[in-house]
Image 1 (cartoon, rainbow, N blue to C red):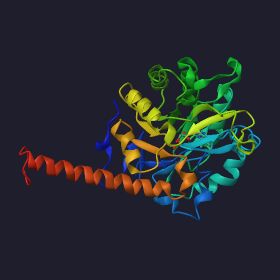
Image 2 (tube, rainbow, N blue to C red):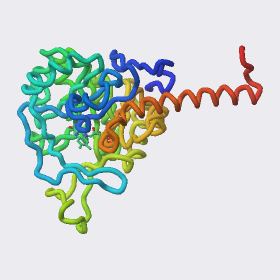
Image 3 (cartoon, rainbow, N blue to C red):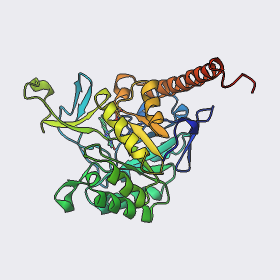
Image 4 (tube, helix red, strand yellow):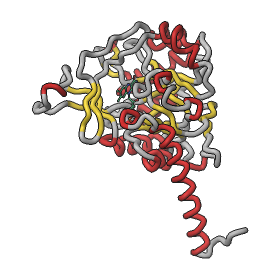
Amino acid sequence: MSSGPLTIAPDMSVSLAGIRLRNPVLAASGTFGYGLEWESLLDLNSLGGFVTKGLSREPMPGNPPPRLVVMPSGMLNSIGLQNVGVDAFIREKLPKLARLKTVVIANVFGYEIEDYVEVVRRLDGADGLAAYELNLSCPNTSHGGMTFGIDPQLTAAVIAAVKKISQRPVIAKLSPNVADIIPIAKAAESAGADALSLVNTVLAKQSPDTPRSARIPSGGGGLSGPAIHEVALRMVSAAASTVRIPIIGLGGILCGADAAAFIRAGAVAVQVGTANFYDPLAVPRIARELQDYFRARNSAARVSKRTDGTQRPGR
Ligand SMILES: Cc1cc2nc3c(=O)[nH]c(=O)nc-3n(C[C@H](O)[C@H](O)[C@H](O)COP(=O)(O)O)c2cc1C
């Protein structure tokens, strides 16, 4: 079982699959660009780390607008995995990212196992990355469009193929769109995943009464933000009681207490996604709030130990 809050040192650093994070709060894929877009807003080196936009073999233009709609308790997106493609990323973004001291994780996706392998192979030849996060919420075109992450065998196959060639740790990012996360988490661990990220967005459909200007052309997309927080917590908790590899919890984190809930459920680190759209400084703020949360909790625990007589100060 993954360890809980005790893995956070007083200085907030944590170790994740052999990677040292300055603190356990990272920015989530697709909500923080390639990181460089945030450079004028905050000190990237002060972050626990960040995960890049998903990278594919070829550049992808993404879906037509509107593709991002604000909902009462989160966001619905159908971005269509728009990205510059792995080669342009290596040429244009990575040299700048490699100069940073913070942890940069590349998010990778594909439609065939060979796509994931090829993207990681190209990234592996370049400096500047700490790990790969495989987005398994993609349809596998060789299996009639079945999403990799909803099938234990497909999940294991893609992870094992990437692990075979990767010099860096491989994090499997699992889909919440399954009835039972346990067989998927076990399959990922057995295939050699070094860590799990849980969860991606929850599949959702728009109401037919949605105003035309906010209607996503495909009729729906992935729901994120506070609406999915408790769904994600349940899955992190289930996975943490099943696998020994570390877990990164995400889904609807808006504040330090939300992040703490994942850590108390067994996650070693967390990612912040949708909150970045509301508050560009969300990642460093949540890291500070998380530190305050555990400080307050530790001092409350000390006080209660004193008052119930089980432990005296100085003992
Ligand atoms: C606009 C947008 C784009 C996203 N793009 C990606 C992506 O490229 N790869 C990926 O693995 N997850 C992607 N995600 C999912 C997020 O990384 C995260 O798993 C999800 O939004 C839940 O976290 P949150 O509730 O904090 O946003 C995206 C989410 C949003 C909102």
